[in-house]
Length: 254
Image (cartoon, rainbow, N blue to C red; front, side, top):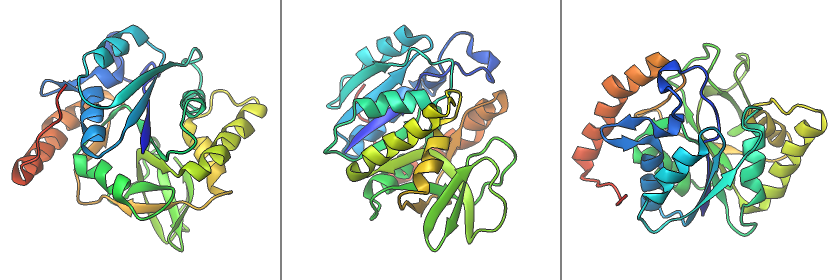
């Protein structure tokens, strides 16, 4: 299994970054990108494409410090100031057609079992879903019917059997890669180069089946605003470290 980490964005909503990409935010001495690579390696992923744009050289420097067994490629999205759908397209263009892939937001702090559940899930393509969250305008919500995720959007309504927030990771079966690329191209042909990559996934969901695995019992958070950084440091990180201490898990080398 391979992975695509989407790390090209500017992070305009997080003023404290001061010209540093969000994936280089540090939590207890380890950046989000470092944590992603460590988790992917531990979960048995073989190859990672990191899609960069804004301050790409800083991310390239961080990748160069990685010393684990993953093969890490850096892919440049020269339209990184447009929609993240273009970063998804850049990542898919270098995907191995014989390998399933996990698409990951770079701005998520998470316990390793969050990723492990997606890697080990008994479905072809699908999501991680957290029913603890409610839609407040920024969250990407998933609507489920008959066990199938039918839509992903910030506003999905209430007429669903299950509603929850998507963690920001999506597993794509290798036989679905072409359909996902076709979904991306559907948006671009309409001139929608400012679309979120989730808009392409929503198109994909009308064409292919996707399932989900719950993560309601695990600590994680996406980081978009200043208050998210505070929550990550004060609430989520201690919960992650407490759970890891009980399990005795150790990070991979970096």
